[in-house]
Structures are given as C-alpha cells and as structure tokens.
Image (cartoon, rainbow, N blue to C red; front, side, top):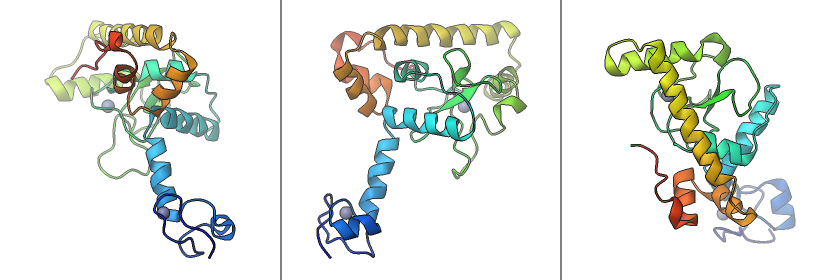
Length: 205
Ligand SMILES: [Zn+2]
Ligand SMILES: [Zn+2]
C-alpha cells in the first residue's frame, strides 16, 4: 500500500484500485475512477468523444467537428419524438446507413444498446427504418393522426434552421470558450454560462 485515492483519500490497495494505480500509489480508487468516467461522459465533450469512438468501432466515418456536433444537439431534443437527448450517449441517428456528417444525422433520444428501460427512437438500426417512418410513428403516437409529407419536411427545416443558428453562435466561440462548452451538460447551459447575449438560445420545452 502506497498512496491514497486523489479523490476520496482512502488508501489505495490492490483490492480497491487497478494494478497500476495500486503499484504506483498515484491515482483514483476504482469506484472514484468509475464516477469520474461517468461524469465525463455526461458532458458535451464526453458525449462527442464517445460518439466518435463508437462510430470508429462500427466502421463509420465521423466527420463532425465538436462545434458541428454541439450545433446538431443544441435543442437538447430528439428530432423524432421531442424527448430529451440521452445524458451519456452521443444522441445521434444517421438518416441512412451513412457516415456521421453535418447533413446525415438527426439528434435522437435512442438509448445505448445495453441501457435498461424502454428503447428510444433508434431501437432498430438506422438503415432498417427510414427516418420518415420513424417520424410518422412518433407523430401518430403523439397526435393520433398521420403527419403529411409537408409536416415532415417542415420539421426537418425547423431542425436545420435551429442547428444552423446554433452553429453560427458556436463557431464564433474562442478556444477557451469551446473548452468550457465541452465541460457543460448541454449547449443551452454552456452558452448561457458563457455569454449573456445568447441567453435567448434556450431549448423549447
Ligand atoms: Zn476514491
Ligand atoms: Zn426520440
């Protein structure tokens, strides 16, 4: 036994820490390490990194910059059902079985495959159900009637307008501000903390 956990200050042992940490006596115990990882994945920057590594793992190209990603998820709401986006996943759905780029993804509440509880909107893989079908299904559940194609297109346009407006703001942030935004839980929260003139950018509730 050498050092103590840098977070909870309990002594580090081979039982409560990874071998490397127990050996060197420098670092966090296992439970603090888990908490730390969980907390990080819940930030915008953490979700961006998570999405990028999952895309890579699934052999999809990831062409989104952090600023683009933030703009796409800026509303904090799922394109299909309007529910809040997940707090520990990227929250993107590909329109078709394409790569992740500016024009190929929607913000989506879909849960990670292993998450408990009812599945979100991307319960089936993106290429198995077209976005318009998923949109129609969620719309019907909400309103009891089918949307017109026009209503689908209007929703897409609304999403794109909001996304583009968010990008206009986010792309003007300085490096230090981007770092702060990465540590925020949501774009609305991050921008509100950064600048008073973007306070009007609150997600619809
Ligand atoms: Zn600890
Ligand atoms: Zn949804």
